Image (cartoon, rainbow over all chains, first blue to last red):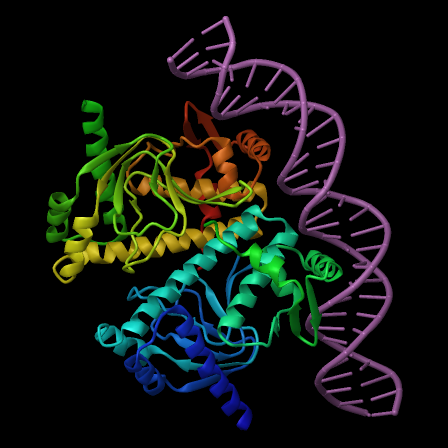
Length: 241
Length: 241
DNA sequence: CGAATCGTTGACGTAAGTCAACTTCAGTGG
DNA sequence: CCACTGAAGTTGACTTACGTCAACGATTCG
């Protein structure tokens, strides 16, 4: 199908833009990236890409769709730890024999490309692929940073702040991966998923979003989210100098 | 002072027990551990061991005292991400040039020993020190796991559950490092610090602790915390099989 | 003996959860 | 075509968990 082909091409562009935003890539990096990216796979919404406790030996690049990283409690409560969007590297850990500390699930139909081969090759000759070697590290750093942000949101912020902060982070990541247009992006999350991410009930997420619409901070339509007040949203995700 | 000597000796024992609980150590591991552990340092309560954004190139083993890892928001709110106790490795990251994503602060007077040299040496010859090489990875895995636990506490748990869960984790870590006696350990945290960790106000922490005392789950006296109902507390930190 | 610092208590306010009903809408099938 | 379905969003009434404020003990310390 030409749909899959388009999503694959767009996804590869997002991967490249994502990596370029993290570090300077050299020709050798770009060359191996174009050549050693693994086979493309497609998964339906709901599919579990990586189960809890699985060996993290098969990282993939997300080319299209959304993936969540979540933990479920015995009584059914669920906490989403993180979201992955097109261009993101999913399920990579530099420590060999490390296992998944959460479950990775497709929130939408997903197209991804295996990264095992690519990462192994750059790992064998880090000095030959300095850009990618640095990128893998930067990506792990970012994932840790996002876990910390998540603790700050749920631990220290009010509902309204949590939503602005999360949306700010998602927006920033979309922009730097060249996704979406202007200050908007496609967001396939239900209000229930948003609640599971920021630690709020579905009903309360709804009310907070409505207030944000009244305040002209965001606008939503057709599964897209537009940011009407970028200044405010960006200041929310600023880190202490 | 003989006090410093005792705390150093006890701390080294805690380090050893901690590492042995993570992985099987060989003679070569134990030998280099005894020899290459760096100089002992002492810091007063309140001292910032590692500032936010500092290069993580000087990891230390905590021999005595408590250290927190925390983030402050511009308006003064503070979130404690993690606690470190005797036997723990503080400020280590396997990714070179990685920077501190939070501030590491001494909550009490602290005695610690430099681990830079030790880690560098095992890193150069991982096959000669298989136990320690595995231990460094296990430690990083655990720190990530604790960030995740923190998200689950603040995102999905009620006040009472949060406290039981945190105390359960601290208790487990003390027991495996051979600290404390029986089901109790020294806990120098104020109720304010506990609140900053689990995302509750000081007053509410106080009420929750009182309820836990009424329920005969814990007892506190003289800066020590006894766990009266270990079964309950341990079941709280169990992971989904 | 103040003077901090920490813990404790009560009264009260509020953010957020719960429950339940009702929309809206996309999809499905008769 | 329209009735039926199920998932997602929306709304209101009510409850509750937790925060805030302020006062008051208990300890420790110089």
